[in-house]
Structure formats: C-alpha cells, structure tokens
Length: 154
Image (tube, rainbow, N blue to C red; front, side, top):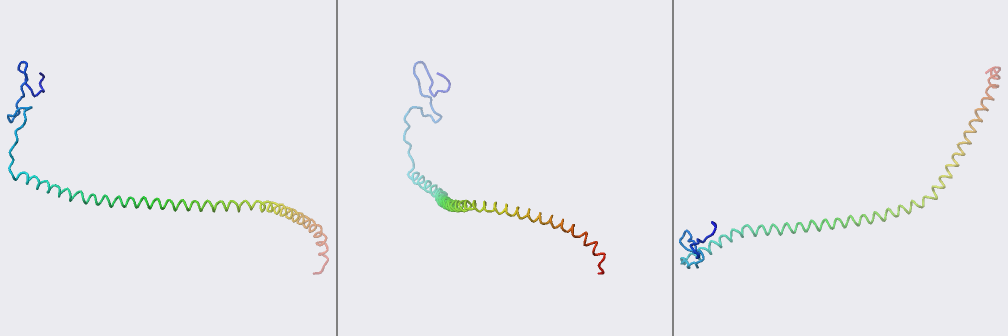
C-alpha cells in the first residue's frame, strides 16, 4: 500500500496502525470514567458562556429592532413625501391646463392688436405728412415775412 494510509500491509492481511496513545484504529473506544462533578462544571461553564453571549446578543438584537423601526419610519416618510409631491404635480398640471385655455382666448385679442397696429401706422404716416406740409408752409411763409419785417418799426 501507499504511504498515506493508516494500515500496514503484512502479506495478505491488513492490521490497523496503532495511534500514539496505544489504541488501534477501527476498534471501539472504551468508555472513559469521568469524575462526578465534571458534568456540573461543564454545565456551569456553558451557562457562564451563555450569559456572556446574552450580554452581547440581546443588546445587538434590541439595537437591530430599533434601527429596523427607524428604517421603516424613513421609508414610510419618504413614501408620504412622494405622495405629496405627486399631488402637487397634479395640481400644477390642472393649473397649467387652465392657463393654456386662457391663453387660447387671447387669439382674438391678438387679431385686434394687429388691427390697432395698422391703425397706429396709418396715424403715424398722416402725422408725418402733416409735418412735411408744415415744413413747406413754414418755408413758404417765412421768406416773405422776413422781408416785410425789415420795414416794420418794432
């Protein structure tokens, strides 16, 4: 047989290799006699260890419950805030639709303003013609009046 085995081959039979304490592999261990108080010591040691774990686990569990509750509160608060934002957006959409309808009623006013613009252009053109006529008239009247004012004593 190869090196890593716990058996030694001598001929055709296999014999278990002995362990360092002298026992043989494959044999049934003999019951060990324990002192009477060793089980009580084990139980006491286990209880002390459980107490230490209780000092760690219960506060950690309590902190986890508190943090989980706070996380739920944050998610609930966020959902409520998002509902408020959605409601505000709906209100804004209604307001914008009303404004759009009101702007549609301005179309006839725009046509009226176009007509007013044409009228003001006509008035401006007429005023310009009056200015030109006044300039011609001033030029026509000013020459003779200048000549006549030379003969006036005042």
